[in-house]
Amino acid sequence: MIIIKTPDEIEKIKAACAITAEIFAVIKPWIKPGISTWDLDQIVYETIVKHGARPSFLHYGDPPFPASACISINDEVVHGIPRKDRILRDGDIVSVDVGSYLDGFHSDAARTFLCGNVDPAVEKLVRVTEESFWIGIAQAQQGKRIGDISHAIQTHCESQGFGIVKELSGHGVGRDLHEDPEILNYGHAGKGPRLQAGMVIAVEPMVTLGSPHIVLEDDDWTIVTRDGQAAAHYENTVVIREDGPEILTCLERTRP
Ligand code: MG
Image (cartoon, rainbow, N blue to C red; front, side, top):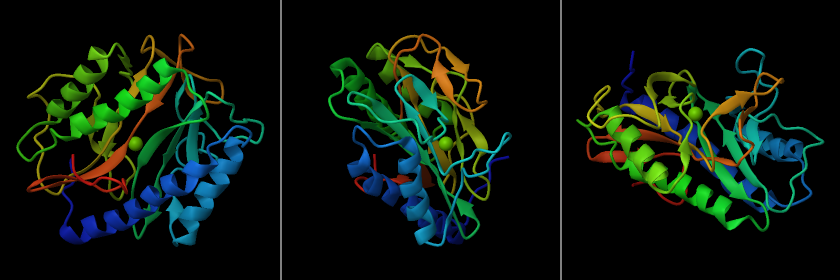
């Protein structure tokens, strides 16, 4: 069931989203060779609790996720577990996926950062993944359908020669971290639930340099590409307004 949020609920979600947006600005200067994903996670945790919020991902799921952020490097698509012995190296791409929970509501967003000198093909993957979010979210207009977003994301990524992960998707956001509707990153325009003002959704393309097939690691969380090639992730929480989508977790840009 898709829950349409009231104006008061949307204000609360916006407050949770503002914290998540700030995390990316705080973390960006720390994405350098030599730092551990554990240390990055500590910075995320401190930024969240400083605002009186709590990390949406900490202890989420089964087995309980043990950290505040999912930090996924290179062939890790999503859900990488921060570790003291996981050290960033020159040329890595580093996806940081975080959520903040404040006053009864969640937020959810991800960025893929470049660490040092990244291979141009991988850098293009990161750029196109982000572009596909903006091209997809431009479709998030009242009266259009979820499939319009999905189709736009898929079309852009595949036109650039990249793969779309099919097993993972975006979702509604609210009192629960993952609500209806499911938002696939592939599909047919004109299909799926109709978008309406008051819906809050997280749109999150997960895009691969090579084959889109994925594998779950033995830690029961980390998802990697089967062929070992790089993957990128970009996500924002978005509210559908009567005059179009408003992006809530991006400090630089709030409209498509
Ligand atoms: Mg998400």
